[in-house]
Length: 316
Image (cartoon, rainbow, N blue to C red; front, side, top):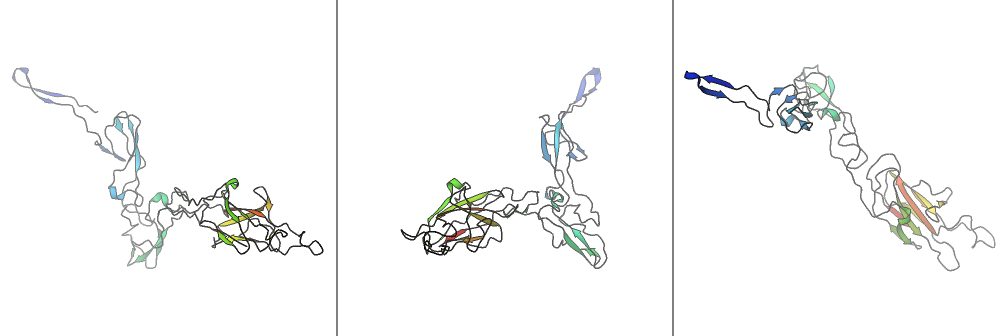
């Protein structure tokens, strides 16, 4: 509270006839000054957001809010606040915060310049990029063609709201597929002629995995194997995901593939039941072990986060 001296006026006989009372400003009001408005406050050290420009201009162009602090019973100036100002031609920035950069500035026919009418702090961050203004009738157009302004996140591994973080606040689809091998999603026994698919699922971050298990039982009491086990993605993931095929369990090694190689960081795996060795023991010995049980680990194929869909498919 700011007090003012009392003023007494004396009439005949020295009797006071008028008094001027001390006064104080009510909360939220005060004296105008650089950086906004000051006024009385009650909680020492309190910091609050402030902006004293026209409300509709905050967050438009160069205009942004700041903060003020309660010191000795009075609010400080609004530090960091940027309020509307006259346009500066040629810098492509919206100083008067009306949604158009450098309007009214003169130019030469065919001349262009970069522009951006979003919040200044988002320019060049994430997906946000400059556009181009063209000179029309010796004045730069208000249209900033090609600029990309902040938008809501859509969980695709990119920073759409241009705050420097991709997919902040995104939660990928929980399809019930475990990130722990011990609780892997089970396809059960896959018989010759079967075709099964897992649920549509998503893996958000590099380093995370989704685990599956499937069994390929013998086709008869005296045989081992049968059919052609095949693991792949049911839809094209555009390279967002890969998988490993391990046998016989979570701690196993990558299973050999039909035609050579092993099931490590692949998008397709299969084995054909024609690997028996020639000779008298051709039905009891083979060049590669039959995969009675396989464990499949799906993982992201990049350092980019996102919520891309994938779906695992197994046939035999």
